[in-house]
Length: 211
Ligand code: SF4
Image (cartoon, rainbow, N blue to C red; front, side, top):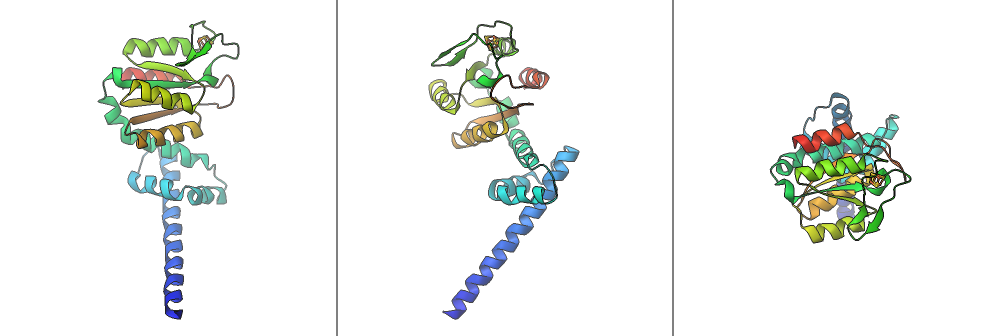
């Protein structure tokens, strides 16, 4: 019995050490990728983020670095992995989801079963962006929450999704895409919040026009 406890104890220590080493290496690669915008060993980075997210973030905090870098690099990696499949998906099989917080604070749109019905009043960029994407063949929705997204995905049966949102929403959206075998791409808001959030619209237009 004593031998068994010794073996288990050692296994736990070795496992802990292994996790620590993976987290340290993963943190180093993530920080380097963020600074250089070059992904080295992307599979290893994604592995460390997926399995050891909290430990990797703790490493960042330990050296006074912003731990949201971990989320940003994770999202960029997942985007990179999906991009060629997204690109090969016919545009009419792609959906775009905008969060409702991107609208102007005085937005006159009304809520329907397909999300907020934008009337292109001109008070925010969403109306023009929606039109531009629809001309290209995308179906575009402005949604108040993730339950709408799940319902619209069930209804319209897309193969690929471009989601706009805060880091938390994009992470959840990309995980949903993985579970449903959809090709997901995420664009993170420049400024998150409850109303009048900010998106880098140049990035959005560049994405839909070139992808
Ligand atoms: S353009 Fe559309 S989303 Fe923006 S404020 Fe007007 S109705 Fe609302």
